[in-house]
Image 1 (tube, rainbow, N blue to C red):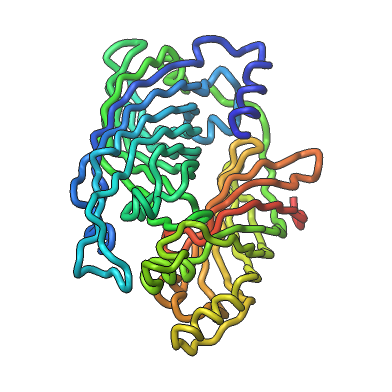
Image 2: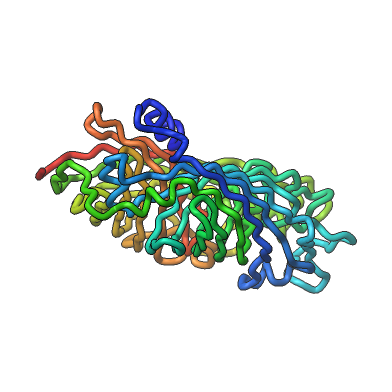
Length: 410
């Protein structure tokens, strides 16, 4: 959606030319971090690599783009990664945390994967030869191997062929000529199903990256002195009302079949779980104090359709915690805009929550949400998008959102 909108408008502009376009080739030797105890126990051999290709489009001072000027003339890209993860072997040993389960006599493999993503790369330093930036990548991945109770029973990281992909990195580029540069930095990559399937530990990698970049536009990006895009920005205050509909599989269901089900049972270590729906209504007070930014605070009301099932599981396992399908939180909101596309983020704390026994283990008192939206100007900036909600950066549900602003002051 992002690139369809961006590239369509770009191609339509008569001022567009090949000088906006570049390419990048990179290699990223990396490893799987093992700070999580379960991942540390699982990983028997580590070491991975990523090969990447990007098609890049730069924003230039000559474009007279106010958003681009505010961001220091960033670069957008469409990227493809081939992730060589088949050297990462996983196994749960006898005597470990197996519950009623039994160890297997083979090692599971994380497996190679592909990632296709959109990238936003923002510079924070530029001169004739040196450039420094940070970048965010969002897209989809495809993994050939995934969890399977017959042949990949210890691959608790990946349970779906189709995955959500997120990446981030810091880089420095040395431009040794007008058109070419060498880039080096560090990158973090994440693949997971966003709790649409289980198990869902997710695969994380971190490591250095080095690349060769073709940047025929770089000299143009440096020509910012005396260039002042025309156009005014009016600050505004508004109420923003959002309805989110998310989908997930339950951590409690996965625990039951992994650790508290006998091997003779048909559901032993299954990956076939029922999907549940959660709903959220959010009411926010926002201030658009800059063209590219808006911040505010809001109340988040949640309805969880699966709490009766969680109550039954807790009762079956001897737990007596309280359960309610309703919860309430308060959160700080921040949204970053580039024309009609925005990246929305929030960090909240619960005011009321009764989610049962295991929620105390995996759900922190705080929660996070990140999403991408497309705003429709002719519909009073009603926005449609997708999001992932998490607790301490562990995905809770993935879903769709629609939001409607009501402007109080412009």
